[in-house]
Amino acid sequence: MITLDIFGITNNGLLAVTALLTGFALVALAMWIAGLISPRSFNPQKGEAYECGIPTRGESMSQFKVGYYLFAILFLMFDVETVFLYPWAVRMRELGVQGLISIAVFFGVLVLGLIYAWRKGALEWK
Amino acid sequence: MQDFSIITDAIHSFLLTYLPGWLTVTVECVLIGVGLLLVYALLALFYIYYERKVCAAFQCRLGPNRVGPWGLLQSFADMFKILIKELIQLNNIDKFLFALAPYLVIIASMLAFAVLPWGNGLQIIDFNIGIFFLIAVSSIGVLGILLAGWSSNNKFTLIGALRSGAQMVSYELSVGLSVITMVCLAGTMSVGGIVDEQSDLWFIFKGHVPAIIAFIIYMIAGTAECNRGPFDLPEAESELTAGYHTEYSGIHFGFFYLAEYLNLFIVSGVASLLFLGGWMPLHIPGWEAFNHIMDFIPSVIWFLGKAFLLSFVIIWFKWTFPRLRIDQMLLLEWKYLLPIGLFNLALMTCVIVFGWHF
Image (tube, each protein chain N blue to C red):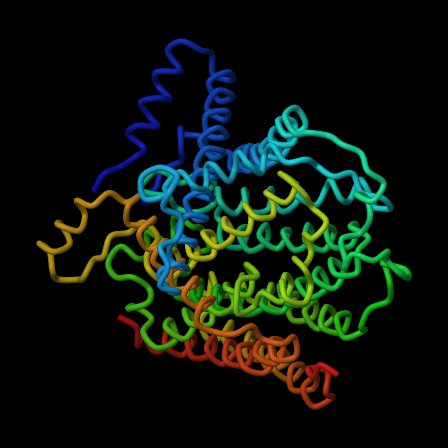
């Protein structure tokens, strides 16, 4: 291996937490600075939703198309299945023929699922 | 080959002579944090300038050219302008979720940013499941976008957020599949390990046909992941004002803007990691003299050069293709990219099993 741990820190969890806190600090710091130097003025019209100039009508958090849910469920199914492919992908050379047959069966189920969804018309946007 | 760990090791041993062990680690973590913050902000500013210049070139304009030499300071001026704008207090919003959304978006891109292989010995987080961690954290961003659209109490933002959600989760499958294809070839998920595996030949040459197919799928899906044209339906300005961040003002809007450009960099960075060798210089087996000359170019320049080149391609997409409709966008993913990706994974397995790669 050529790559070395930065500063010799081997605890990657610590580094991940550092990055997370950095992201948090970036937003918090910028919000604080903006709060100090940005102007404030009050106007009742200002808080209105930015739509088209006339007062908003109806409920904003309204119902939406069920198609979005359908694709979210499809995504959930395929994403969980692809997660199972990662461990095999790393160890595929060591697992050999047995691993290949096992994953072929699993892969077949995944493809059948896609074909089923396709034939059922779940992939259409209606 | 230059090794940046010499510098970090020197700082480490310098600190260790004056401070106890635990304090050294703390100081180093703070140093890493400050470094990340600076690089993140500077890169975002550079990308804003870069995109505007490239866009201007495509439209036969000059682009920013007044503030500083060649307009280089334009994005700094824009940042200060956005910082001094008023943060408008809105009626009827979910205040907590509204404030939380930028945090999620920025943290997701910052974590993904820290995993990228910057150079030889300049990588921050190097988990043994590095690339999986990267995919995992970059999908937190979609939560921030959904929250932003939902909490704003505006019809346009809600539609924008839902479109963005449908788009990002759909295309994540293709991103995941092309990553798995390359993990098969690499035999490791560690980012450092993947770069190391490419020391003789980059994966796009090593894996030839399946690697090139995976690269094309990754570039299309990556463009959709960062909500850029032709997949910019979440913020289609002609139909949805500005999409999910319509109601955000001042620096609040700036965070989404920042994260969008950083996601562009992360997508091109990951593409260069998986297919073009990360920071690894161009090596051709057998050409010893050529390989030595390539080693003289610092690894950071290799990585940034590849990332900027791939970003140029993604920006090029934006100015070439018209925006897709939502049904076309979902059709492209579920009926073309996903089946091709699955087939490509099987193809890559065959290539590895029969030893057809270089």
